Length: 329
Ligand SMILES: NC(=O)C1=CN([C@@H]2O[C@H](COP(=O)(O)OP(=O)(O)OC[C@H]3O[C@@H](n4cnc5c(N)ncnc54)[C@H](O)[C@@H]3O)[C@@H](O)[C@H]2O)C=CC1
Ligand SMILES: O=C([O-])CC(=O)C(=O)O
Image 1 (tube, protein in one colour):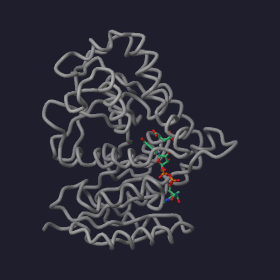
Image 2: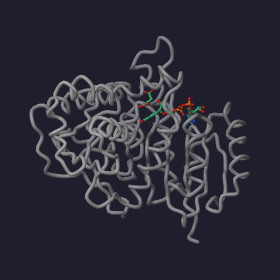
Image 3: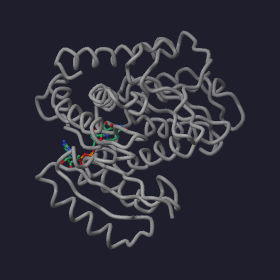
């Protein structure tokens, strides 16, 4: 067995945390040969609940689980961290404006970014799940100036999986035969799920996208508003599907994406596809298993897609400007 990997999960006592921790401990994220040491970060009021989850983790007797520790201090929780899953965030409360939400989350992701800067292992990889995920990743990255900004990513894998499932239902093609879908932009209702470069059972995605009524009135809004639809139906936001997407994001990042396919992730832009440098935006990405995401290059973006990508990027720019004016970055 190799040396255990330190995995810190914030918001560990929340609903995504409960769906996530057991699968990480079972080896589904980093592989069955890689032991993990779980480090759970919670706010003081939720530490007791996290302790209950740790007891259950013990009771599973996972061979890949090398230990569980619980913290209410980010400096301690991120000391020596290799993989950080930033799930805990401040949900939007009644009467809260967007700026209030950004400010409240700045109070979480700023200190967490500084703690990662101070104590993380040199190979640290960070996935931000807590909303607004892209801008929270931007805040954390900006507060960690000694860690490469490309190590901070935001989760759009759930949107990617939702898009796969919608295309499978529309085309009658198994999910396994749908490749090269892309989520562009923000993890919000402005995101753009792009079918034009996809392969659907060996046929070009553009053939399915040719049904413009389905594309614009059904596919795009269904994917973009799926989070709200789940909340409406379940009375709580997506948890098991979000945990599943987080595991897939980290697994592909560290172990590699399948040959002949790509996935979607929110990455620190270096100007690809006209997305201003320093925004955390979703792109089509591959990984060769060396722990670096690469943006897929050279895709042709037509007018239809350009307008939608630009609209989502404009929203990211507004969020960036808002957190800048609040002094959070
Ligand atoms: N990017 C994506 O695709 C998705 C993102 N989300 C977001 O993930 C986040 C978590 O969702 P749930 O687990 O359902 O929420 P939840 O409310 O069940 O759990 C959040 C947990 O975070 C903890 N927390 C709050 N502040 C913290 C801090 N400073 N440090 C450590 N822990 C802290 C809370 O005590 C709570 O236990 C939300 O922001 C949600 O909107 C949810 C689904 C998909
Ligand atoms: O919409 C929400 O609050 C939760 C979320 O991010 C999603 O399910 O995509």
